[in-house]
Length: 138
Length: 132
Image (cartoon, rainbow over all chains, first blue to last red; front, side, top):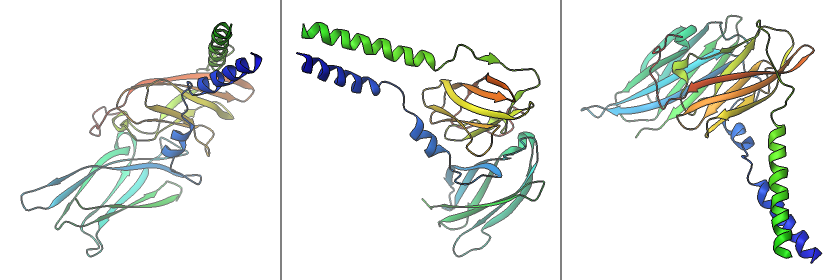
């Protein structure tokens, strides 16, 4: 009788462990910085629109900020290339500050191909971060 | 007899579980001094799903975040930045309303709490819609 009770008790304990929301794994998946970052940044491909000439327009949503000082401006430079064409779209440069820390950019590709995007960030005290992305043609 | 014992076992762990959950919100928490505030790194137009949203606790001295948790938002998570003492992050997988609770210390003052939000997390949002 006692053994049965202990078994049931143990099973109940194990079952109830799974009732609590376990989110630790999620945190490691969403935090992508492996070393102390100078900047927080995010570049998302929002959509790819094809026109009547079968050219693809890649539209990106970008957010960036200095990790240590949220009010500080960040200089950014976005360049676009394919394996064949070094500057497939015009390089964009600007200063991200206040509301402009969130912005949109797009690149119209002359031919369907993989697009390489380089995001170059520079802080007011010379901090630097270069991130590269690759987006496949659809 | 076995049924009664099983019922008591389940009841015990129900009660035990609730006690553990209740302890996660400490009764001794206090709210923060006026010179300390929360600053979002991104404008609200950038609050979209699947984006890590950084926030800084501004003002005060020797700020150290001890915990961050979501109180509203099924798909959302909150975390203290592992490299910056004043920074915490919020993240949602789906568009929804988000509220979080951040506990931190400032000098000798411990268990200070900020309620962050509510923020609407969008599927997609054009920049400068809110103007910061």
